[in-house]
Image (cartoon, rainbow, N blue to C red):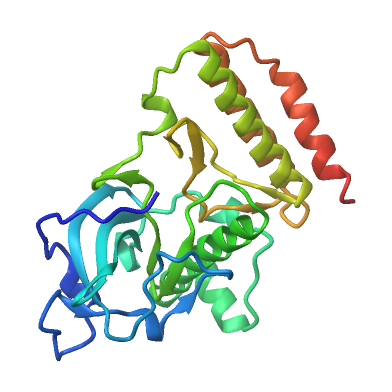
Length: 281
């Protein structure tokens, strides 16, 4: 799913993330790998970890209210075999952040210091920065956990402040389409539903709900799904609204497949998801 495209380099917004005044002879910045938190092992072979690697921003892949996703190329100069394109998700900060659903999703997440808790509740400037860090950290941790248990998610390469680098899903610099944009035949549609069903039930068994699952954050690559956008991942047991989020995830996906001509029993899918989650109690 990773890509080695030689696209034109774009410096769009990359200066905001360049904390190294001594720019490398190639690229826009030295690799940030050494100073970042890393994804789980065993690490895929394509992840470039060499300290002599350099990064370049290739431009915006997707722009959203909460974050922008860029393409970032990382390579080792002189090494054709150490060259990869990744997706860089950069969360917005301060007054620019528009997480209008913070309150519900953040229930069950706690910080230790009462000053930080108050700042987050009051949405002061400091509090918004803390919330931003929580969203980035929550998504990175969720991706790591989902990767470890074998769910179809992008591999989380690293987390550095509010920038998360992860596996790029697509080919030749073109991102895989969202499920909502596909028009698969009936056989493929049935296969895709079974993959979605497996994700929902496996998540529930682990005590989680995606929290915002829809055909817009499920990618389809080579007739396989990859689930993205995890910052709002919900602890079904720890969050008082957790079961509501799980039920909504299942209902939204069941209705989409039904609307595309695959008869899916929404009640059965919801019931299976709830049963899977309650087995942990």
